[in-house]
Image 1 (cartoon, each protein chain N blue to C red):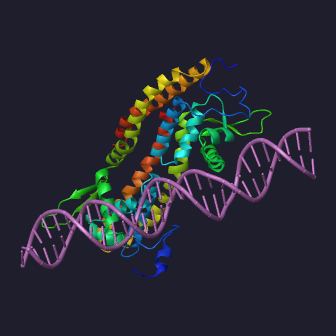
Image 2 (cartoon, each protein chain N blue to C red; image 1 turned 60 degrees about the vertical axis):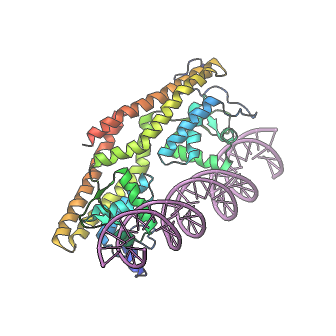
Image 3 (cartoon, each protein chain N blue to C red; image 1 turned 135 degrees about the vertical axis):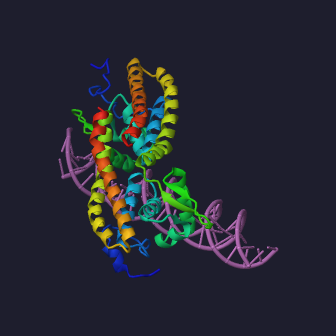
Length: 178
Length: 178
DNA sequence: CGGAAAGTTCAATCTTTTTTGAACACAAGG
DNA sequence: CCTTGTGTTCAAAAAAGATTGAACTTTCCG
């Protein structure tokens, strides 16, 4: 059933029942630490790194009570964190028959992870500001001097070029990360 | 520092507290706003976005007193912000003969900007964690069961593969952004 | 129904980051 | 030497952000 763990699923193993969860061993702690650091780089709260890290290094899907206990995290924090990661697509819900709890497995396709991240973070900014740029081109017309007007139009033009470059780069990135 | 608020209300965005409205015109304000938003995406403080944005849309190099006044920012904050941006390579010192003040111009080559950013942010993380990975591979050996041991080794291996992928991707990115 | 288990919510609290401003250092000119 | 202009420092205040925990909703099941 699961003697070979083809990297992705290991769903069918019966989840630990109500008993105590072991606290984290060195290996788990180390892996989690890496994801905490990664979360930091990406500007996410530490707790999201912990949650994803635990899911990543856990052979079984994780659930709320487990993370509260093993990561020493409050129920509220864990609940919100799991939801955030699910919304981000970093954790995937796993249905387990006959168990009312919500289980989660990590998304481990880096392409998907990065894609969701960009969609979530970068795209809103790009849309907002490419809209704003149209307005700004008009504003630039009413500049004090001709020199300033020319300068501003150049700079605003360049900003637009940057954004276009980034926009066209994103699909390319997706393909590279296949 | 108590001009009419109505002027502020014209600007599209939400918060808009006092500041940055003094002697900035609509065009400057709009450009700065875009960089503030970008700073936000990148997890930098708002003030760095303001500083770079002002430098970007200013035909002349900027200096401390100017940004304090035009951005309504304290001297301390401006001083630290300018230094941070200079250290990051986003602002370049400009020497002006016969003037004691420190002037700055923006770095506008996107390749340089991105390069410095990655070097500053991502590289430290990659180095830290690729060191940690070596340790973790050993830790994984002492896992409870053979299945868990195998699973952990796979996951840690995959982590290493991600990092390697990212590392080899960075130089490529540099070239693409030429 | 009634109780227990699971998850959510949110105001209060704690933590971390950012900003301020006054004191300080330094250099140049008188 | 003073004074003035320029920039830095850093302790304290403010703001922003994250976490907690207790109350609440929902669902399941006897």
